[in-house]
Image (cartoon, rainbow, N blue to C red):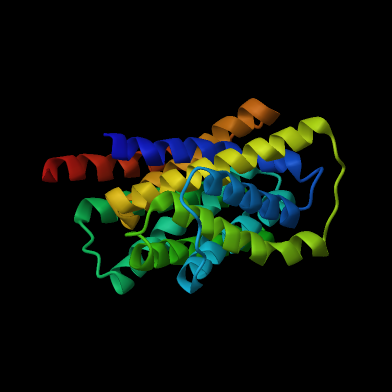
Length: 274
């Protein structure tokens, strides 16, 4: 059960990250937020792990998972009126992941996993269409694909390495990648509250959550973790309501319910196999 607690904790943290980022883009640019997250994640994890070594494979995985993906999330949150909708579109990731894992990792996909992903993606689609998708909403879908590719790269190249130091190295590579984006469109309306929230976001979402994510990938496999990550949009809608009073539309509630049913299908089917 502990292995399943990891992705559930990640889902809650990343669900909170969407409305928190929506708040922070009023003070900092999306590129700077992404860069700061990666930099703090690198420093935080380096302080609690063995010396960090950044090689080519680690750099590629870091740029995909923590660089390009987070940058696209932040841009999407800034342009969209609904952080929950952005998170729903980002979680087309399991659809890409199940295909890429089957192709690159020769993963055997069980029927209950196919059903779970199908229900989850249907839930994402219903939430997205109801939210009124614009052209800029293609950004989180692209982010979902890049994240899926990054997860497969990690599983193929890095899953056997120590997770803490490897995640630290990936954050370091992502910070180097994001530095030009942070400098190119830098803006800051500094307040103590905004700075503290940005630091908390970086430590939780970039340090702790990514560490738990990759530990989950190592213990449960990329497809199953991707399926459980479909809970993030549910948490995102919940925290968006608590933060901004944003009430999900009826289709978004239906979509979230389908996501939960998809996760239940995966869990029940897996339990029967054990």
